[in-house]
Image (cartoon, rainbow, N blue to C red; front, side):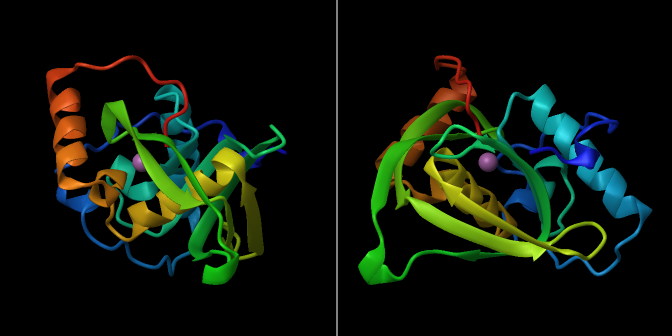
Length: 185
Ligand code: NI
């Protein structure tokens, strides 16, 4: 699966935890114009440059409801897709299986921590042309869809950790005390 917008953009700096754009709700996209296409292209190449598998627009400083993924699902197939104004849907509470696994974030580069999340998720939204898009996520992709949707709500994964673990993660990031990760959201 490919996305024609996944090439040709310009790498932009990744915004870091603490920058206000990461800690507030992103705005709905209302203009489906050239600027939106440029944003999506820049998001892809910025994600690839940072070796991430997902990136939200506010991670390059733009507070709009857009994210991109290039992430394997449970079968190992990489889903490459951008989505504008995404809406996340999780399995009903009584049908929800939690998967606890290590999670990291390009905006808190380096460390990771275990986060329990539902092992399935669906995101519906539109593409840059306003055409409907649906991403069905399993495996790492299910985690990624939830992580990127959180970003658009102004939530970073460390906000989901206990105070003690959050302190450890932020300390490791600031002190640069971590092993290199290769699948970062
Ligand atoms: Ni992230």
